[in-house]
View (tube, rainbow, N blue to C red):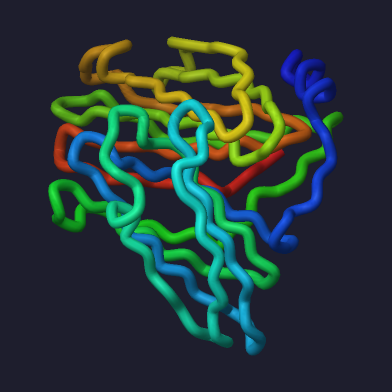
Length: 233
């Protein structure tokens, strides 16, 4: 177990979701001409009580709404109708529900659909004595560019350790960091590494106790957003 466990053990606190037992979290962006349409789908034969909350990069709540979904029914929200554009208006959106959901995400740039993702994996409560990871692909090859977003979906502080590997296994960057409640941070690999034929590889985010959420934003050849939701240990 790495040193991340020491800080995570101090920060980890138990909690109960206010709306229900299922918590989902994902990346949104209302800066740079971006917007997000969220589509909530109930997967059960009973109604779903749902609450969605949106936070800026510093963890300030910008908007929240509660609603009821019909059995196997759906509802959608275009975030731009409720959250204005702003330089810090990006980060984590959370969805709490009392039944399992599927969430379809349509990312827009200048009003045009550029990327679709879906969320069905909840954010887990983790053992503070056990390390868990999220891993993703990054590339700075040719005109491709990558941004990494690490988000805290909780009301409590969290800690994580990020390592960025080149394709040959060489560590290019590593950092241990804490995030305040609902705070997010962005890693600009374009500005950090530039471009090169061998500038691609693995981004590895380690955590314990309280899970962080990771998204990878690919740009330079358009825009694509991928929320990484497969935790492993």
